[in-house]
Amino acid sequence: MISARFINPHTDFGFKYLFGREETKGFLISLLNEILKGERQIKELEFMDKERVPRSYDDRTILYDVLCRSDSGEEFIVEMQRKDEGNFKDRCIYYESSLIATQGEQGRDWNFRLIPVYIIVLMEFNVSRNEKLLRRDVGLMDMKTNELFSDKFRMIFIDLNAMDKLEEECDTNFERWIYILKNMDRLKEIPYKEVSDMWADFEVVADVGSMSRAERRDYESSLNSYRVLLSAFEKTAEEGWEKGLTEGRAQGLTEGRAQGLTEGRAQGLVEGRAEGRAEGRAEGRAEGMTEGKRVELVRMVLNMKALGLDEDAISKVSGLSVAEINEIKP
Image (cartoon, rainbow, N blue to C red; front, side):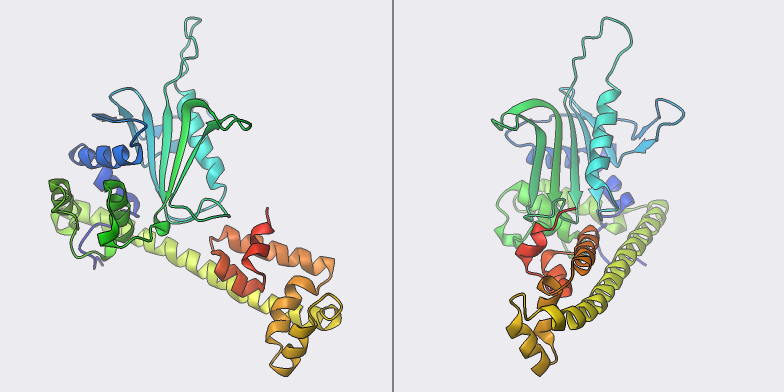
């Protein structure tokens, strides 16, 4: 059942409906130009076949959300990614590399001249386990001088959840696009119509009531799949919390009593005995444990990171500080 007024762009159907059709190409051009401001300016786009046929029997078929080429030749993969389903960075590199590989031409006359390829991912999670940023730009750089080595391979990741501005605080169309895309399923109307007529046009297209019966049916199916995916990730995260708390209590109570006092956690364990061993469980997990238990704790933290839990949530489960959590790398 559809309850929101506007199409949810986080669904497969919704994102392609809003940005992947000839009728809505102007919105995609606007979004890309805001993302690429100061780097490239797109006047026209041509949609390409989103399904790339494998080059051999054993190759994988790749299906992109939106695949297009600009009037000046650059190719763009534009994706909406809801959750990190594993090896996300590697998959992005594979997608872009596969598109670059299709530029190869047979014969001796081809001189390996490539056109730039971009992958732009709008996402609902932090692509890095370190600082949470709204935008990350990745390219081929000289590691010593930080100079751009080549502009032919570009990756741009935009974490919608890192948009912390209020509606009235968004000063640029880039910020306005990100605010709308993040909050669209909760909006009663599309803001910024006084800024540009484009937002009024977008409001009409994005209204669920503007879809045909067949489009609405496809959207409902995509929306249900999106909800199932979110539910699955939430259940996995909840199970991780419960398992982490159970293991943490056991580790903190057993190992904390034995070694916490000798490893600098005396106060936490003494207070833990007096007050339900609250600090002893948290601090004993991090400091007062055998090497084997330490390995288990590290594995638990890495699993929670892979599920997309933020540092505060992991800290609550593991008893480690945010600084300690950030030191744990896969």
